Image 1 (cartoon, rainbow, N blue to C red):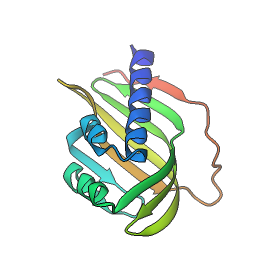
Image 2: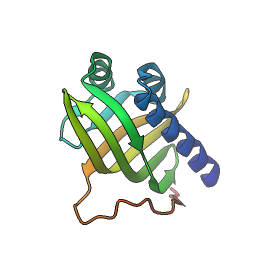
Image 3: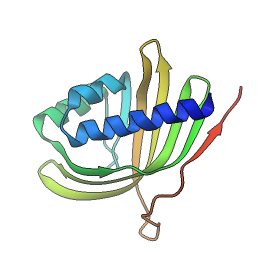
Length: 141
């Protein structure tokens, strides 16, 4: 079950990053929980509605995104994805290169797995930018 869940979440992570890179915000919204908390590396926190409004208006434009996964923690009804997000974006008309540590939280709903939270934090300058081998662990209650 744990490896099956990790594989599903890995595929969903691929889909959500591809959606924003392609500007398909409807596809992103379909993967997101209505109560999404999206914390940017700038410290700005968006809801699903405010994030989508910014994307639709062109405030956020994703040109390239890579998202290596370092670890997936599977608990009943919840999955935490720890990794990195390297991206070239335009935010508010300013070109930026992001090199972030990232944490995504997925929750299981009646409609399937939905992204509940995402947090990007700038990597320290001395941190390696190379993806590490993905690890999966299970938490039991």
